[in-house]
Image 1 (spheres, rainbow, N blue to C red):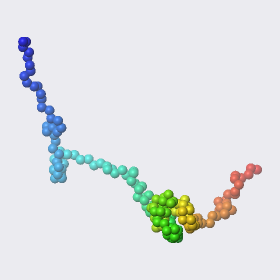
Image 2: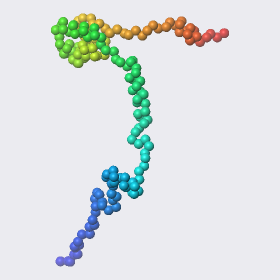
Image 3: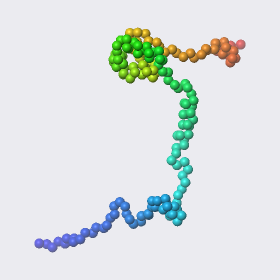
Image 4: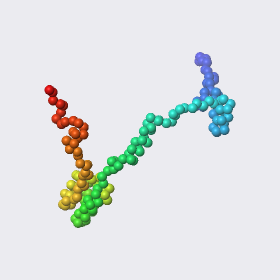
Length: 170
């Protein structure tokens, strides 16, 4: 048998995986430790201007919210009390529940409940479905008057223009 040399020992070195204790700087964890480190010069701090706040995204939000609160134009029209009362009376006259009326109309029961409570936004198609199922005429919500329009002659006199396009060539 031939004589073969086998390695007798391992040539492994020590390896630290993760946190290595050598060359690590101790970071103070308390406020007193931080102020002490600042005083000794071990830690330097920098003041960041505008850090943590995106001023461009939030600068006009307060102004827009104030405009929405001040204007009354953004309020939705609600169902008139006369319409909600008429729906209730017609439904009870037919001896129907809100759920039965809603299924006959192919709508959700919440829609009928909102119309009867006066919280819904009026929709002509839904009112027409109710009229068809209840077989009666319901009061429709009227349009709000926009005010009298000035006549064409009055606007022409005010602006100094004459209707009919550009002046004639001579």
